[in-house]
Length: 327
Image 1 (tube, rainbow, N blue to C red):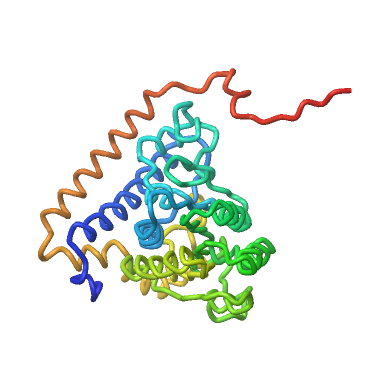
Image 2: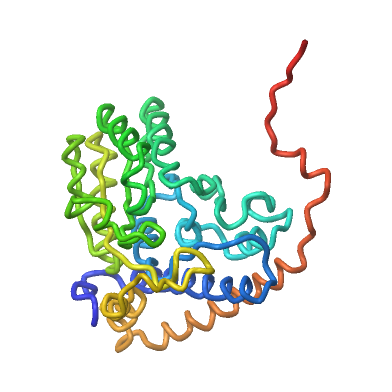
């Protein structure tokens, strides 16, 4: 399988999309091994199979645009430009990580790259994204906010409240639902009678669109359209990206609830394989060079992370906000 309209795009853009997706895949595969070997603290929620969603969206944004993320944030962070080194240091819990070792996997981010540290509460980033977009609008800026969440978040109150608020004030938010068909282990068909998440946009009077979330170019184009609308004051927009995770909900989940025929159908449309198959005939050598470079980058990040200093006891009281109570 290939992506049909890829010839319309510059080779450098296509290679950049491939490199970013492959970086996410290999980063997460390596991190998974480190966790299973007991060499890394905490826990992880991975996004193998969903790389086209993160990369397609973030590639269509400007550098000063913002994103919010979820408990499954590695792909979003790498797609928005957070470096593998800063992330790996964070995952090892070191004090020089992108969140100073205090965020870990589920709260990773870098505001300097336009990524608010991820929010692990399901749907928690939705009202925050609306608030950020309100600030952007009040300041007269042309930036947009892309808010990532999963299908499980669409039955949370925060989803309805956040979309309604953004709709009535025409805020510049792209609400990005990565619909991988399962909220943890529960199929979306068991908890919603709506055929497509994007159909819910009509309840708020905004535009919704369902997109092939494994076609990185389809995601890229849909996000560009949505971002242009938001910059013109015609937002918000709800994008539903149909995709599929190749792993369980978290590192201890074998995903037995995914039917084998369903897995085979989606795995055959792996987003990285789709793009590689499209490019390999003319750009195969450059693809191989990218793969080699990514392997070296990740191994270097691991070595750097292991050598970084541990947080100190004094770090417990930094970056903490308190209110002084007087009697």
